[in-house]
Length: 456
Image (tube, rainbow, N blue to C red; front, side):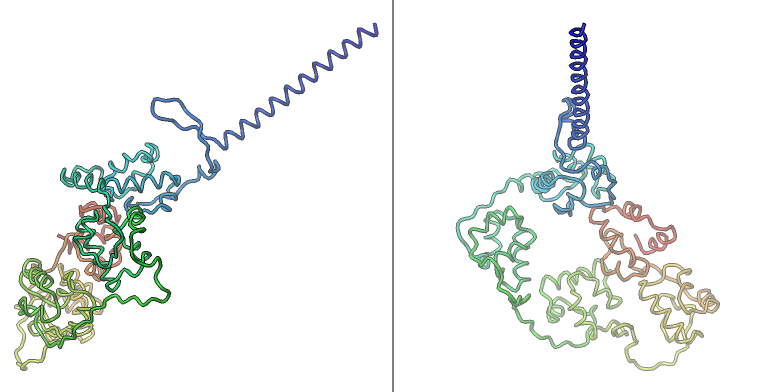
């Protein structure tokens, strides 16, 4: 009897021990599964294959954090910025290599989507924020052939060389395009006529990191620039020009060259006057807006510019001294956009109001609507309405632009555009359609209406 009881107790003990270990094993399995779910993620291999496990070094919580996305141009992003968008280091490097393969620039969303390191899910997440056209149908077959041939170009380095001695043709023979070769020489000129060091040459934006690595062993330049090295951005001393008063409307090719412009620049200025300005510089700002006239050059010329009977000084336009003729103004033959300070005071405006009117009109480039005239600060509205009732109002000579082509300086100085200039300049990098640019800017209706007064 005692033996039977002993055997029963042994059986119970063995059963309990097995049950205990079974429970422990089940708990261990549950903990392991929880750990794996946090450190591994299931991703599809492709559309038709089974799911596979891939190790994720990023904690699950950070993966689920909402990223704040904003509009971006994929052509402008660095490796770090691609990482911030949620790509891995390897994916970011692949995207940048792919960009070089397609010619150094993504031309459409469609092209960016084809990069194999951009998954369909990731593309759909980013697509609304990408500042590129939907597809590349607007690019010709010739441009596609150019990009593909360019991507296959390999550098042909004949041996060690000093890049300071290379001409444009030498850079082309190395494997760079004509535009790139011209840009490299322009950069050398900017540095003062010498690349100084390998470090400085590397900073030239048209030489990719990959091409620089290939060139580096053959460059006869010091590795780094000497400390406190004085970089002369122009070794050629400027010849001092004895400026005299001139009317830009009366200058020919030689006249512009005598003012220090090259033959090409002079030709551009004359072409700009004929085609863009329709044959006449109306004020100094017209000359300033010509892209071959640098700010420094314009400031040199400014005190000497005389247009018709007007002299341009630092901030104002004054009448050039002329014989005084006491003729009373016939305001029915006077245009609001050409009326002078003197005529305004003659009509009854005080000097402060007349000055505000002229200043505001000059900033706008002329009034387009009568409502604008009444917006003038310090103006006597009743008196102005009387003037508007008797005088003429011509707007056919007011300068207008397409928003995608307007000069940057004009955008940054015009009262209706200056607060939005940077945004406009950013959007038109990717869009050439004015309606699209205005839509992207999400302007207030009244702001957009004012802008459209000066848009074609």
